[in-house]
Structure formats: C-alpha cells, structure tokens
Length: 121
Length: 118
Image (cartoon, rainbow over all chains, first blue to last red; front, side, top):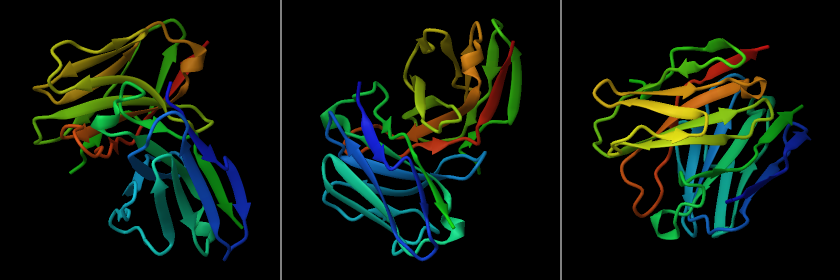
C-alpha cells in the first residue's frame, strides 16, 4: 500500500531553536500535503495545505513565518518550526494525497505519516 | 457550527461484543465523503472505512461497518466482535466536495476513546 515516511518520530529541542520535520511519499506522487497538529487527547487540527510547487495555504491563526512549509517536489514536503517555544510542543502529522489524477493509493485518497512528537524544553 | 460531532468522549465494550461509535456531520455540499480512522497510542492514523455521499450501500470492511443515515446526517461506525487491540481513539472525518483536481482537506471530529475490556 501507499506509504508516507515521516521523520523524526520524536524530537526534543531547546527553546529558540528550529526543527525540521520531513514527510516523504515513497511510492506515489503527493500532489497535496496536509499538515496537522494534535494536542494530547484532542482532535487533529489542520495547520496548512501545500501543493507541489506552490506556496502553502495556512489556516487562520497559524503563523506562516513560524511554521515554514516547503513542498518542492512531488515526493517531499517539510515543516520547519522556527524559534520553537514550549507551547509549540505537540504531535505533528502529515497527510499526503495524489489528487484525482494520481489515483487513490490507499482507497480513501489520503495517506498519513506516522507523526512527530515535538517537545520544546 | 461543528462540521463533525462525536458525542462520546469515551466508550467501553466487552471483548467479543459489538460497539457503535456515533458521528454526525453538517454540510450543505451534496458531494462529500465520510471517513473513520483509528489512532492507537503510538499516534499513527489508521484508515478504517470510507462512505461516499452518493453511495447506495453502507460501507463494510471486515469487522467494521458504517451505518450511513443520510437524512439524519449520521455516519456511525460499528465494530463487531471487539478485540483488545481495538482499544484506541477513533476519529470520524469528512471531506466536502469531490476529489477532482487538488485534494480537499479532511475535517475531524473530537474523537472517541474506545476501551475494550477482557
């Protein structure tokens, strides 16, 4: 089946540093990548949507200068948390879709990465 | 208004019994898709089942079935013969519009924590 590899799975960083999270589609072309954030025992909240080669579209309330998203190729999207603070500690998870033209590799059209637990100390 | 509502924060079920997890949705789009995902404590999102708004039959996937009542805007998940490994958080999600062209985002409900008792 379709696979999205997300790294790192866990990261601890110091306050003020930047952290990059990668999502790579291994066997299909991810036209669209969705980035979600999830606090403990809460739902997934969409942060931004990116299409390959275009600027990401951020949801209201999400700082685009803090959460930098790059989707330069059809198989790789990255989320960089810049100048991280403890309140940025959360679970970040990506979801890739090929769009209709690329087919639906998972039967539902979306393949999730395994998530990244970010802890900022 | 909430687009996806899951009213059961937590549910308990005895092993081998069936359980229904509730989900109601709100949309004015005639074309939409409804999804259920399982999220164990490891955090990964496991796709369980999908129902399209125009699908005539209720979706089934193994022990999972979706009780789709369009007029009531509900899409409840039924898990038959519960297993201990079914203990996890379950999310209902909706995609509005067709999937032509760029993919549309999923909107998630608040989730239901299911615990299967031995």
